[in-house]
Image (tube, rainbow, N blue to C red; front, side):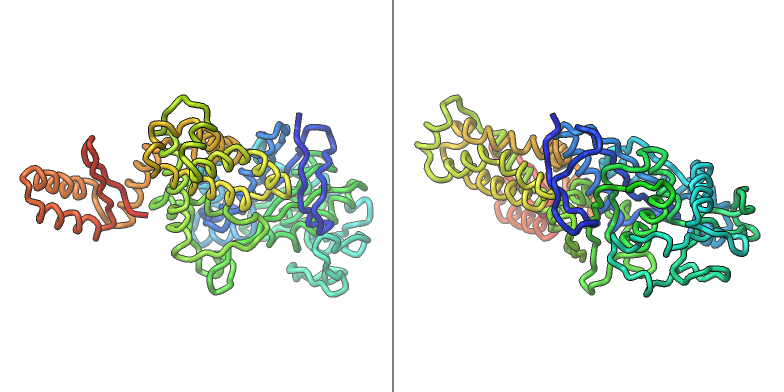
Length: 490
């Protein structure tokens, strides 16, 4: 049975009990990409946020129908194609392929449907025709405009005053400054389609209304996207959809906060401060980005600087270390006996582990509180790592850390974190961080081998010197009875 939860609704500005249109089912539409470039780490926050949201709902037995669109014809695409002397459809397809490569590399689940503007043209034209027939849209100079003042509730999402608004579409023929384009008259050399109003192409906002209507119905459960889309995009979606269908549009609106630079700017291509996802993944495991995005509440702004991913990788490493320490513990005694014998450290681990699931669900079911949930997990991980230093932990601690291991599994299943084995995690960290450090594995292995030989020769001075050399390069050497291993310092 699907479990109840609360969600902050941008429409009401309140946390609300989620009430589905159909019991046990969630229709979710998330605004996707305008495909004229590679996705950057700002875009990826929305991608990871809604990926984790869908994973969690499905974990809680909700049947989620997840739709995310592509805008594959747009002014930006046409401009970029002209700059590259390339066909705009070919350019859009190239970046759609790039998007899929990047989201696969991030480990994201695929939506149930990925509609595109160019394959939804009949639905878009049909919705515009409805708006014209109902008196909510008008033709002027070959284009079709939505008449904002015909929607009495315009501004209810963004709390904008319609009398103070001016649309970005500054073209002659508009009846009101706030009116926005549904259909743009064809320009020479640009893609266009036939319509009752002449050749042209859709305005930006109408596409999502038509796609969501087609795939989820006129009224559906949740509409998501970045906070920067609240106005004008989502406000305009509501207006045109409700006027076309004479019905409520999305019941709940879910918006993720934006990445902000230390300067206070948001990340954006026009600002020249973009880091592409594929660039970030060259030197960091994908789960680094996931934990970075999920460490804060999804609605809050998230600061980005050069330390963001190194710090996130350090957090991720502590979780893997705790799980590795817990997995190494054995013993068959009753957990309480071990707790009584091993003292406060064992008691803390056992209590945090046994209460974790209830705390996790409580935080997650209160407006998708990933930051609070991760806070509980880090506290548990620190307790496990402290307990691992107890002299009796390795042989007898297994029953004490069993609930902690279940907590780590819960995070994997519900949020997509800690999906690798420890060996896989450290291998990926080595491969990617050595690239960042400008080092070759063979160089490190050679120094390790040289140090091992020095130790065999009992040349302790040289061995110490080689250890210092490795440490200066960011390499941590670990000696044990089983031999020498090494890791990149985090």
